[in-house]
Length: 381
Image (cartoon, rainbow, N blue to C red; front, side, top):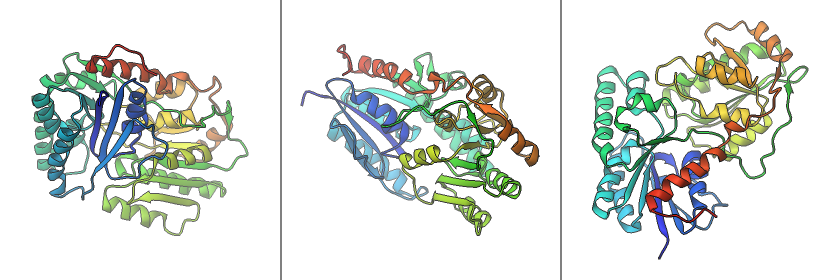
Protein backbone atom coordinates (compact mmCIF):
# COMPACT_ATOMS: atom_id res chain seq x y z
CA UNK A 1 0.00 0.00 0.00
CA UNK A 2 1.15 3.53 -0.73
CA UNK A 3 -0.54 5.15 2.27
CA UNK A 4 1.63 6.54 5.02
CA UNK A 5 0.77 4.97 8.35
CA UNK A 6 0.52 6.79 11.67
CA UNK A 7 0.13 4.94 14.96
CA UNK A 8 -1.32 6.78 17.96
CA UNK A 9 -1.01 4.72 21.13
CA UNK A 10 -1.58 4.71 24.88
CA UNK A 11 -1.40 1.86 27.36
CA UNK A 12 -4.29 2.81 29.64
CA UNK A 13 -6.41 5.21 27.58
CA UNK A 14 -9.24 3.50 25.66
CA UNK A 15 -9.16 3.38 21.87
CA UNK A 16 -12.09 5.81 21.81
CA UNK A 17 -10.26 8.29 24.07
CA UNK A 18 -11.14 11.93 23.48
CA UNK A 19 -7.62 13.15 22.78
CA UNK A 20 -6.30 10.07 20.94
CA UNK A 21 -9.31 9.54 18.70
CA UNK A 22 -11.48 12.67 18.57
CA UNK A 23 -8.63 15.18 18.50
CA UNK A 24 -5.40 13.60 17.21
CA UNK A 25 -6.94 10.75 15.22
CA UNK A 26 -9.73 12.58 13.44
CA UNK A 27 -7.50 15.59 12.72
CA UNK A 28 -4.82 13.43 11.11
CA UNK A 29 -7.35 11.38 9.14
CA UNK A 30 -7.84 14.49 6.99
CA UNK A 31 -4.23 14.41 5.79
CA UNK A 32 -4.29 12.99 2.28
CA UNK A 33 -2.66 9.61 1.74
CA UNK A 34 -2.57 8.48 5.37
CA UNK A 35 -3.86 5.64 7.47
CA UNK A 36 -4.35 6.35 11.17
CA UNK A 37 -4.08 3.41 13.58
CA UNK A 38 -5.21 3.97 17.16
CA UNK A 39 -3.95 1.51 19.76
CA UNK A 40 -5.16 1.51 23.34
CA UNK A 41 -7.14 -0.13 26.08
CA UNK A 42 -10.12 -2.24 25.02
CA UNK A 43 -13.29 -0.16 24.57
CA UNK A 44 -16.15 0.14 22.06
CA UNK A 45 -14.96 1.27 18.65
CA UNK A 46 -16.70 4.44 17.36
CA UNK A 47 -19.26 3.58 14.67
CA UNK A 48 -18.79 6.78 12.70
CA UNK A 49 -15.00 6.65 12.31
CA UNK A 50 -13.60 7.56 8.87
CA UNK A 51 -12.55 4.68 6.61
CA UNK A 52 -8.84 5.47 7.04
CA UNK A 53 -8.90 5.15 10.85
CA UNK A 54 -8.24 1.68 12.26
CA UNK A 55 -8.59 0.62 15.90
CA UNK A 56 -6.46 -1.83 17.84
CA UNK A 57 -7.99 -2.46 21.31
CA UNK A 58 -4.83 -4.34 22.23
CA UNK A 59 -4.74 -3.93 26.00
CA UNK A 60 -7.09 -5.50 28.52
CA UNK A 61 -5.51 -6.19 31.91
CA UNK A 62 -5.83 -5.26 35.56
CA UNK A 63 -4.04 -1.99 36.12
CA UNK A 64 -1.66 -3.50 38.67
CA UNK A 65 -0.68 -6.79 37.01
CA UNK A 66 1.97 -8.49 34.91
CA UNK A 67 -0.29 -7.92 31.92
CA UNK A 68 0.83 -4.32 32.00
CA UNK A 69 4.41 -5.47 31.35
CA UNK A 70 3.44 -7.99 28.65
CA UNK A 71 1.55 -5.23 26.88
CA UNK A 72 4.85 -3.63 25.86
CA UNK A 73 5.73 -6.70 23.79
CA UNK A 74 2.25 -6.82 22.27
CA UNK A 75 2.61 -3.21 21.22
CA UNK A 76 6.04 -3.72 19.67
CA UNK A 77 4.73 -6.67 17.66
CA UNK A 78 1.84 -4.53 16.42
CA UNK A 79 4.26 -1.83 15.26
CA UNK A 80 6.35 -4.38 13.38
CA UNK A 81 3.25 -5.75 11.65
CA UNK A 82 1.90 -2.30 10.68
CA UNK A 83 5.23 -0.69 9.75
CA UNK A 84 4.12 2.90 10.48
CA UNK A 85 6.23 5.85 9.37
CA UNK A 86 5.23 7.89 12.45
CA UNK A 87 4.50 6.68 15.98
CA UNK A 88 2.77 9.07 18.39
CA UNK A 89 3.28 7.75 21.92
CA UNK A 90 0.64 9.20 24.26
CA UNK A 91 2.20 7.83 27.44
CA UNK A 92 5.67 7.31 28.88
CA UNK A 93 4.95 3.58 29.23
CA UNK A 94 5.16 3.02 25.47
CA UNK A 95 8.26 5.14 24.87
CA UNK A 96 10.81 2.31 25.04
CA UNK A 97 8.91 0.03 22.65
CA UNK A 98 8.19 2.95 20.31
CA UNK A 99 11.82 4.06 20.33
CA UNK A 100 13.06 0.53 19.66
CA UNK A 101 10.77 0.22 16.65
CA UNK A 102 11.57 3.68 15.28
CA UNK A 103 15.33 3.09 15.53
CA UNK A 104 15.09 -0.30 13.84
CA UNK A 105 12.73 0.76 11.04
CA UNK A 106 13.81 4.42 10.65
CA UNK A 107 10.41 5.81 11.64
CA UNK A 108 9.72 9.13 13.39
CA UNK A 109 8.76 9.20 17.07
CA UNK A 110 6.44 11.92 18.38
CA UNK A 111 5.75 12.09 22.11
CA UNK A 112 2.37 13.51 23.08
CA UNK A 113 3.06 14.64 26.65
CA UNK A 114 -0.36 14.50 28.29
CA UNK A 115 0.90 14.76 31.86
CA UNK A 116 3.97 15.69 33.83
CA UNK A 117 4.22 12.12 35.06
CA UNK A 118 7.17 12.58 37.40
CA UNK A 119 5.49 15.51 39.16
CA UNK A 120 2.17 13.66 39.39
CA UNK A 121 3.83 10.63 40.94
CA UNK A 122 5.61 12.76 43.53
CA UNK A 123 2.73 15.01 44.49
CA UNK A 124 -0.40 12.87 44.21
CA UNK A 125 -1.40 10.31 46.81
CA UNK A 126 -1.73 7.11 44.79
CA UNK A 127 1.37 5.43 46.30
CA UNK A 128 3.39 5.56 49.52
CA UNK A 129 6.40 7.86 49.85
CA UNK A 130 9.19 5.43 48.95
CA UNK A 131 7.32 3.94 46.00
CA UNK A 132 6.37 7.42 44.73
CA UNK A 133 10.01 8.46 44.62
CA UNK A 134 11.08 5.21 42.95
CA UNK A 135 8.38 5.38 40.27
CA UNK A 136 9.02 9.06 39.64
CA UNK A 137 12.74 8.42 39.20
CA UNK A 138 12.07 5.49 36.85
CA UNK A 139 9.63 7.40 34.64
CA UNK A 140 11.89 10.46 34.52
CA UNK A 141 14.86 8.31 33.55
CA UNK A 142 12.94 6.74 30.66
CA UNK A 143 11.75 10.11 29.35
CA UNK A 144 15.25 11.61 29.51
CA UNK A 145 16.85 8.56 27.88
CA UNK A 146 14.41 8.51 24.96
CA UNK A 147 14.17 12.31 24.54
CA UNK A 148 17.10 12.69 22.07
CA UNK A 149 15.39 10.24 19.69
CA UNK A 150 12.04 12.06 19.76
CA UNK A 151 11.36 13.94 16.53
CA UNK A 152 8.89 16.31 18.16
CA UNK A 153 7.09 16.79 21.47
CA UNK A 154 3.42 17.74 21.65
CA UNK A 155 2.46 19.32 24.96
CA UNK A 156 -1.09 19.16 26.34
CA UNK A 157 -0.27 21.94 28.83
CA UNK A 158 1.66 25.20 28.48
CA UNK A 159 3.32 24.68 31.85
CA UNK A 160 5.21 21.59 30.63
CA UNK A 161 7.46 23.82 28.54
CA UNK A 162 8.98 25.15 31.76
CA UNK A 163 8.71 21.97 33.82
CA UNK A 164 10.35 19.46 31.45
CA UNK A 165 13.98 20.30 30.61
CA UNK A 166 14.43 17.38 28.19
CA UNK A 167 12.19 19.06 25.56
CA UNK A 168 15.03 21.22 24.21
CA UNK A 169 12.71 23.53 22.23
CA UNK A 170 11.45 20.68 20.01
CA UNK A 171 7.87 21.10 21.10
CA UNK A 172 4.48 22.50 20.17
CA UNK A 173 1.69 23.22 22.63
CA UNK A 174 -1.66 21.66 21.66
CA UNK A 175 -3.98 22.12 24.61
CA UNK A 176 -6.95 19.87 25.34
CA UNK A 177 -9.46 22.28 23.90
CA UNK A 178 -13.00 21.24 23.01
CA UNK A 179 -13.53 19.29 19.81
CA UNK A 180 -17.01 20.05 18.50
CA UNK A 181 -19.05 16.88 18.12
CA UNK A 182 -21.40 16.24 15.23
CA UNK A 183 -24.53 18.28 15.77
CA UNK A 184 -22.92 20.73 18.20
CA UNK A 185 -24.71 24.05 18.27
CA UNK A 186 -23.44 27.11 20.06
CA UNK A 187 -25.64 27.48 23.15
CA UNK A 188 -27.63 30.62 23.83
CA UNK A 189 -25.95 33.28 25.93
CA UNK A 190 -25.91 35.07 28.32
CA UNK A 191 -26.88 32.49 30.94
CA UNK A 192 -28.93 33.24 34.04
CA UNK A 193 -29.96 30.60 36.56
CA UNK A 194 -32.57 32.61 38.43
CA UNK A 195 -35.74 30.57 39.11
CA UNK A 196 -34.19 27.46 37.52
CA UNK A 197 -33.58 24.11 39.24
CA UNK A 198 -29.86 23.54 39.77
CA UNK A 199 -28.55 20.58 37.76
CA UNK A 200 -24.96 20.18 38.96
CA UNK A 201 -22.45 18.12 36.97
CA UNK A 202 -19.23 16.41 38.05
CA UNK A 203 -17.70 14.59 35.08
CA UNK A 204 -14.46 12.82 34.18
CA UNK A 205 -12.11 11.11 36.60
CA UNK A 206 -13.80 10.33 39.90
CA UNK A 207 -11.08 10.92 42.47
CA UNK A 208 -10.50 12.64 45.79
CA UNK A 209 -7.83 14.92 44.31
CA UNK A 210 -10.35 16.15 41.73
CA UNK A 211 -12.84 16.98 44.48
CA UNK A 212 -15.51 14.32 44.19
CA UNK A 213 -16.32 14.48 47.91
CA UNK A 214 -16.51 18.26 47.84
CA UNK A 215 -18.95 17.96 44.94
CA UNK A 216 -21.17 15.63 46.95
CA UNK A 217 -21.01 17.86 50.03
CA UNK A 218 -21.93 20.94 47.98
CA UNK A 219 -24.88 19.11 46.41
CA UNK A 220 -26.08 18.13 49.90
CA UNK A 221 -25.94 21.76 51.08
CA UNK A 222 -27.67 23.14 47.97
CA UNK A 223 -30.35 20.45 48.18
CA UNK A 224 -31.14 21.50 51.75
CA UNK A 225 -31.58 25.10 50.60
CA UNK A 226 -33.15 24.33 47.22
CA UNK A 227 -34.83 20.91 47.00
CA UNK A 228 -34.99 20.90 43.18
CA UNK A 229 -31.16 20.63 43.09
CA UNK A 230 -29.65 17.52 41.49
CA UNK A 231 -26.08 16.29 41.04
CA UNK A 232 -24.93 14.05 38.20
CA UNK A 233 -21.63 12.22 38.71
CA UNK A 234 -20.37 10.57 35.54
CA UNK A 235 -16.93 9.12 34.87
CA UNK A 236 -14.44 6.44 35.81
CA UNK A 237 -12.99 5.72 39.26
CA UNK A 238 -9.71 3.79 39.34
CA UNK A 239 -9.39 3.66 43.13
CA UNK A 240 -11.57 1.00 44.80
CA UNK A 241 -11.54 2.72 48.20
CA UNK A 242 -12.63 6.00 46.63
CA UNK A 243 -15.39 4.29 44.68
CA UNK A 244 -16.66 2.54 47.80
CA UNK A 245 -16.72 5.84 49.68
CA UNK A 246 -18.59 7.53 46.81
CA UNK A 247 -21.22 4.80 46.92
CA UNK A 248 -21.58 5.21 50.66
CA UNK A 249 -21.92 8.99 50.49
CA UNK A 250 -24.51 8.91 47.68
CA UNK A 251 -26.59 5.97 48.91
CA UNK A 252 -30.26 6.81 49.37
CA UNK A 253 -29.91 10.31 47.91
CA UNK A 254 -32.39 10.43 45.04
CA UNK A 255 -31.06 13.82 43.97
CA UNK A 256 -27.65 12.32 43.11
CA UNK A 257 -27.16 10.11 40.04
CA UNK A 258 -23.91 8.19 39.50
CA UNK A 259 -22.98 6.77 36.09
CA UNK A 260 -19.80 4.80 35.45
CA UNK A 261 -17.64 4.27 38.48
CA UNK A 262 -15.93 0.94 37.86
CA UNK A 263 -16.62 1.08 34.12
CA UNK A 264 -15.37 3.54 31.52
CA UNK A 265 -18.03 5.90 30.20
CA UNK A 266 -18.06 6.88 26.50
CA UNK A 267 -17.24 10.54 26.05
CA UNK A 268 -20.38 11.04 23.97
CA UNK A 269 -22.43 10.00 27.00
CA UNK A 270 -20.64 12.59 29.15
CA UNK A 271 -21.31 15.26 26.51
CA UNK A 272 -25.02 14.42 26.71
CA UNK A 273 -24.96 15.27 30.40
CA UNK A 274 -23.21 18.58 29.69
CA UNK A 275 -26.10 19.50 27.42
CA UNK A 276 -28.63 18.50 30.11
CA UNK A 277 -27.02 20.07 33.21
CA UNK A 278 -26.63 23.78 33.93
CA UNK A 279 -23.71 24.08 36.42
CA UNK A 280 -20.26 22.52 35.97
CA UNK A 281 -18.27 21.61 39.09
CA UNK A 282 -14.45 21.68 39.13
CA UNK A 283 -13.67 21.28 42.85
CA UNK A 284 -10.01 20.35 42.36
CA UNK A 285 -7.99 19.86 45.54
CA UNK A 286 -5.01 22.25 45.67
CA UNK A 287 -2.05 20.23 44.41
CA UNK A 288 1.20 21.16 42.70
CA UNK A 289 0.58 18.53 40.03
CA UNK A 290 -2.56 20.31 38.74
CA UNK A 291 -1.91 23.89 39.84
CA UNK A 292 -0.48 25.06 36.49
CA UNK A 293 -2.69 22.89 34.24
CA UNK A 294 -5.92 23.80 32.46
CA UNK A 295 -8.61 21.18 33.17
CA UNK A 296 -10.00 19.67 29.98
CA UNK A 297 -13.51 19.90 31.33
CA UNK A 298 -13.10 23.65 31.83
CA UNK A 299 -13.09 23.94 28.03
CA UNK A 300 -15.88 21.36 27.72
CA UNK A 301 -18.16 23.09 30.22
CA UNK A 302 -17.53 26.48 28.65
CA UNK A 303 -18.37 25.13 25.19
CA UNK A 304 -21.77 24.16 26.61
CA UNK A 305 -22.20 27.49 28.42
CA UNK A 306 -22.24 25.89 31.86
CA UNK A 307 -21.56 28.36 34.66
CA UNK A 308 -18.53 27.02 36.55
CA UNK A 309 -17.94 26.56 40.24
CA UNK A 310 -14.17 26.11 40.25
CA UNK A 311 -11.45 25.99 42.89
CA UNK A 312 -9.63 29.31 43.09
CA UNK A 313 -6.42 29.30 41.07
CA UNK A 314 -4.84 32.42 39.52
CA UNK A 315 -4.53 30.78 36.08
CA UNK A 316 -8.10 29.49 36.04
CA UNK A 317 -9.42 32.68 37.57
CA UNK A 318 -8.06 34.71 34.64
CA UNK A 319 -10.05 32.58 32.19
CA UNK A 320 -13.21 32.56 34.31
CA UNK A 321 -13.09 36.31 34.86
CA UNK A 322 -12.26 37.17 31.25
CA UNK A 323 -15.23 35.24 29.87
CA UNK A 324 -17.65 35.65 32.81
CA UNK A 325 -17.88 31.86 32.86
CA UNK A 326 -18.23 31.15 36.56
CA UNK A 327 -17.29 31.68 40.18
CA UNK A 328 -14.02 30.78 41.90
CA UNK A 329 -14.70 28.97 45.16
CA UNK A 330 -12.85 27.80 48.27
CA UNK A 331 -14.52 24.40 48.52
CA UNK A 332 -13.03 23.81 51.97
CA UNK A 333 -14.91 26.80 53.39
CA UNK A 334 -18.20 27.27 51.55
CA UNK A 335 -21.04 29.42 52.82
CA UNK A 336 -23.74 27.73 50.80
CA UNK A 337 -26.55 30.35 51.13
CA UNK A 338 -24.29 33.17 49.89
CA UNK A 339 -22.87 31.04 47.05
CA UNK A 340 -26.35 29.96 45.97
CA UNK A 341 -27.51 33.57 45.93
CA UNK A 342 -24.48 34.65 43.88
CA UNK A 343 -25.00 31.78 41.44
CA UNK A 344 -28.66 32.67 40.90
CA UNK A 345 -28.20 36.42 40.64
CA UNK A 346 -25.22 36.48 38.25
CA UNK A 347 -25.22 36.54 34.47
CA UNK A 348 -22.66 34.32 32.75
CA UNK A 349 -21.10 34.35 29.27
CA UNK A 350 -22.29 37.89 28.61
CA UNK A 351 -19.79 38.10 25.72
CA UNK A 352 -20.78 34.71 24.29
CA UNK A 353 -18.73 31.52 23.96
CA UNK A 354 -15.06 32.35 23.20
CA UNK A 355 -13.71 30.75 20.03
CA UNK A 356 -10.30 30.27 21.67
CA UNK A 357 -11.58 27.25 23.64
CA UNK A 358 -12.14 25.06 20.55
CA UNK A 359 -9.78 22.40 19.15
CA UNK A 360 -10.19 23.59 15.55
CA UNK A 361 -7.47 26.16 16.17
CA UNK A 362 -5.08 23.34 17.12
CA UNK A 363 -5.94 20.96 14.27
CA UNK A 364 -3.98 22.59 11.45
CA UNK A 365 -0.92 22.91 13.70
CA UNK A 366 -1.03 19.18 14.46
CA UNK A 367 -1.38 18.33 10.78
CA UNK A 368 1.69 20.43 9.95
CA UNK A 369 3.77 18.65 12.61
CA UNK A 370 2.90 15.19 11.35
CA UNK A 371 3.15 16.10 7.66
CA UNK A 372 6.67 17.31 8.33
CA UNK A 373 7.47 14.03 10.08
CA UNK A 374 6.00 12.14 7.12
CA UNK A 375 7.79 14.47 4.69
CA UNK A 376 4.49 15.28 3.01
CA UNK A 377 3.85 18.57 1.28
CA UNK A 378 0.33 18.12 -0.07
CA UNK A 379 -2.59 19.75 1.78
CA UNK A 380 -5.18 18.14 4.03
CA UNK A 381 -8.51 17.16 2.48
